[in-house]
Length: 183
Image (cartoon, rainbow, N blue to C red; front, side, top):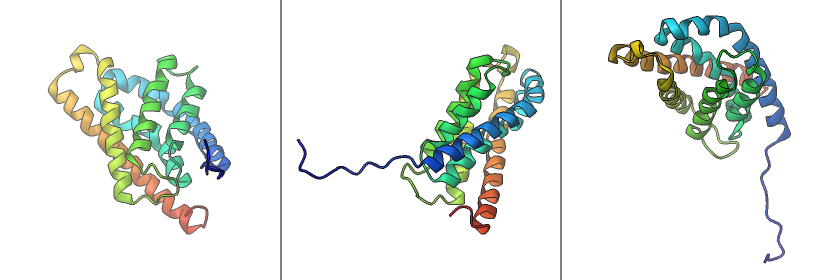
């Protein structure tokens, strides 16, 4: 039963969906540019791979920050993942780390639309995503890399890479705000 009043439903703005899809397509191009390097690094040096692979979360994080809409990091990562399935060295499984990274970012940032996000909160969200991405990568580590030194270095590299990505996103957000493109 209703009391006669319509329930206000907050829909995702079309502009947020379009921005996220566009950034997802650009992220797919970034993926194509770095996949030759990351493919070699994944097998040779997990810490180096972890540092470089952080670039795969750059545009999902930017989408989440500039749209101020929960779920947009995940959507952006999904678009990028779908567009890169054919060229990913691991095929459709490549969606898993992309989606997990986007989801971790979305969950670590405010779940309320239009909420301002401080730089400190962005950095914390990046660190959380870095830890989550490290954990999802553990099952694919080769046995010779499953030693404390390599695991510790890989975790640190993943978090440092994510913090670097977040710093770039913070700088881009400032520039876009100064230009009047975003709030």
